[in-house]
Image (cartoon, rainbow, N blue to C red):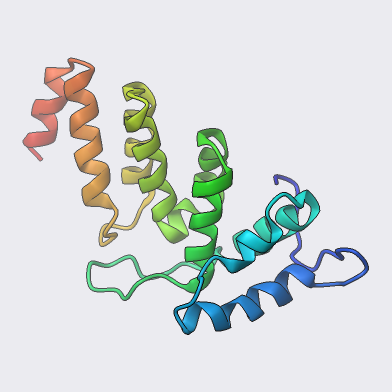
Length: 168
């Protein structure tokens, strides 16, 4: 996905196909039907999926309210999150954190959860700390990152770091 700079990629002779598909998929999302029909329909079609991923990332670069009382995220963010859950691994999540983690917050949450599931505590700690350093103070994702950070320092047997965390 890296290196793609535009969401106006022509697909099969149709310029802006990914952007148009995202707009049309909004009808399904808002009416509560299969929210991920676009992902299902384009599955296995690499050219379409690459353009869709690029378009979703570009649309997700706008910062969203991450406060505890902010309403749920956008349809675009929801579709991108499901895209990554289905088709991308942890290294791609790392790249996504670098691209839109600060603006969206949830890529950090998913990434540290992935490393926690694998019991890769060094990476879980690294990315939890990265998110904590970069996310806004009011971000609802900070609490989860703090929890994973505490669990990681405990599992890595770093009591001094755990005590420092408690003393904050």
